[in-house]
Length: 266
Image 1 (cartoon, rainbow, N blue to C red):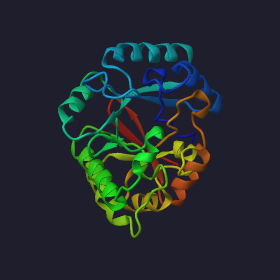
Image 2: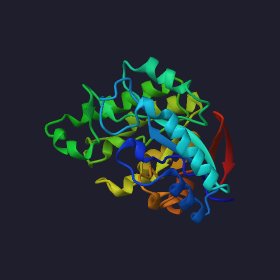
Image 3: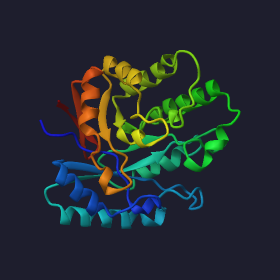
């Protein structure tokens, strides 16, 4: 079988990525990837919510950029998606975004917990000081479970992003992982192996091997994503990610089109 699609990539519209989608698609073709998916950070109702996402007024421009990438790279299938932040209180907004376009799939992610605490922002490292790690991790996984229950997302993004700076509670983490993975399994959606974590302070892919093994044992759906914010990162470390998936008990991955998936064996 060919390489799995890279289903997690960004564009300059998020204000912290480099290079146009057509460059990402060209890099994918160079690597032998025949399918990719763009997942720009989705707008929030207020343009000043933060400074690292696409604006609502740029949704049409987003599609124009993907149209151009398709024209320039006819041998690469380009799927259209968003990475949508789950925050309590924004459920109706999230549902409205899901209806804006016939998305091929949607990624749900948690980047904020508590009172709009942007826990993974590289400039906010010092805000971890004095935090109760058990409480922080419980809130994070509580948010992931709530995001699944919304029944909007096809994939949950980097499902242990909370480890980004290496701050982990002591003790067994499986009690946090299991309810989340059970919700994913019951909803028949997927998690991703996100290779972008290698470049973060945690120094490893998302999720960590023990969580991935639990997911593999439960038969949870799986996709792959580089979280590329520059074209050179497209498909990065995918061979290692596939081997990790196999060692963790996965025998197949998912491909999406028009909101539907098919399972593809390794």
